[in-house]
Figure 1 (tube, rainbow over the protein chains, first blue to last red):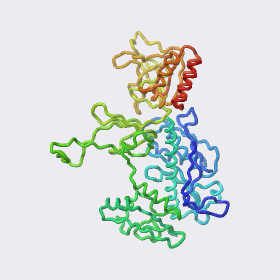
Figure 2 (cartoon, rainbow over the protein chains, first blue to last red):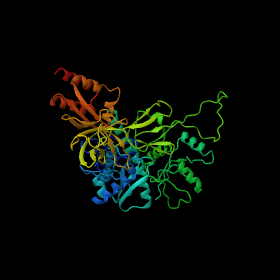
Figure 3 (cartoon, chains in turn red, green):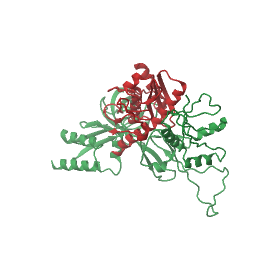
Figure 4 (cartoon, rainbow over the protein chains, first blue to last red):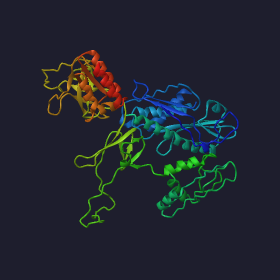
Length: 197
Length: 355
């Protein structure tokens, strides 16, 4: 099941050089998502996106706890297993997306969907969304946000590097706009799944 | 460097926002040309703080950052080139998320969506056209009670969707407002009172059997909950037996309890399931589909071979036919039914009927 997300053509600025195919602005890489692909667990999803272990687990866990209605299942534990198939940048955001889709696939009652978006700030201050591994390495700062689907509120943020207060707000606004695309992709992907039955 | 947002508010939105604030507030829809290539343009949200807060609410609570030297007003931050996208986001946020439940029937709904219930008005009074009967508490309309089924939760006077699936509605038989629920595809079973399930006996301790039903904890089944069972006449149940029963207690706070008799004390098909046969697991959605009154799959399967079949609402099916080969064929057909269309199914059945 493939979902190709192309942003508006007018948002991409043309750059003559062969590297950095995406200019500043909201442009995300190709998405693909597949659900219900493992038969033994209750729910499973694979999320392909473009391209500190314990702390990453903690971040994902806190995001999931904020969204899942745990009060409906007392005295039970919900285990989310994330397997990295390949890392092409924005790993944490991809993990968050996969965790959300897997929870939806398992039928967990949730109060909203959530998604992860990564921003990278390079030395000049240009903002790049959904950076590749190369762009992440050369960036001055990398910020990852988890946003919920109801009001685009911030659920979790983790940042690394140097940035100013204004740049933080700028990245947050850009991430909120980008989450629009991710949630639209979720909707299309889920609609396709339910259209088969 | 101060980045500001160019926020384009369409005339329809402007009208709506002005109506809401009854002309007290005017949204500055000024589209200033950026004076420097770094700026994307700006919108001034007004200098008094209270106006800012009201406008911020009206615009759907976009994240706002305070800029250096921006005075008492706050400005929206966005990267150059982002303006158009954020404007779209703002409009969609401010557009009102809650939709009427009627308009979304049979469509896929996602967790987090809010649905409005249809409000019912009382019948027209004796005054005739256009007149409504006087009420003591004006403003409260009589609302029909709507039952909130699986996948939905009440949130104020709205329904909050908690699971992904298709929204369904059932007309009310007698009084009441009918039932709304979300048809979701799910493998994991959560015990529900009144459900008939197939369980596997895992332990026998004193007077109670522990039965695995696929939920988070095993259900308990008393040995007296069988037809004709007394303290002297115990039922013949061993560990590893299959039991078909229904839940009498099933909620999130207590251990589920099941029985193999109905309220009159008769077995009614429940009890220990016989020897042989095959137990396999399918998704909950498939079980509901097969048990629907207008399902042709079962009739077609019945025409193929004589068989015994038991459906458990916890996703388990027990099947028994004359030979092991027939049993396996039936099990494979039922498992594959989920993904096949009606035509493919008919093809397979006709091919099997020939051989």
